[in-house]
Amino acid sequence: MIEFAVKCPHCKKEAWVGVDDPRFYKKGMLICKNCMHAERITHRQRYNAIVKRNCDECGKRIEIIIPNQREKVVKITLPCPTCGTTRTYEPTHEVITHRYNELKPAHDPIFHLPLWLQANVKGNVFWAYNRKHLQEIKRYVNAKLRERTTSIGMTMVERLPQFIKEAKNREALLKTIERLERK
Image (tube, rainbow, N blue to C red):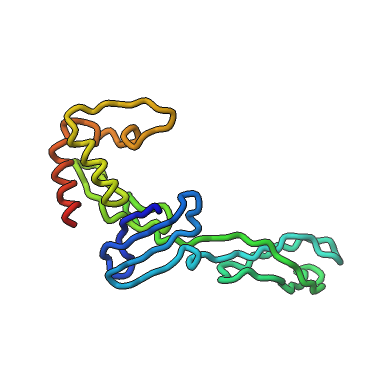
């Protein structure tokens, strides 16, 4: 299971966003143990019902979008705007997921809630997905000898921002990490 420590949208305390498999973010879930708020990402999904076709009678184009439906619309009965002939159509559906989109620079990839473990370090945003991730970064920052291992895929260390890799920021990063550990 992949977990992200986030700020609860209701009580503003630490909550968790989790998903069993990273390929299936559509099955993501939010749980706050402080206020007991829980929701699935599927609860935030809406459907746009779309009909785009030509009228059977006059041949003119019919285009209509019915936005923000909680359920998929099976059939829509519409009059042609040109000739007035009424027909029933099966619409196509566009899935839209409403995310929180809070204006924090670091957020989880499912609900887009701000990460709980983030802070400013010398003008840079430092963040970690969860406490285990924070400990991995701490180990790297604490290491006296930072060896690079080459592999086919990129390791977490290779993807770290440059300011974390720079030795001059080591003290400030360790203080920030300790502060986030207490949070």
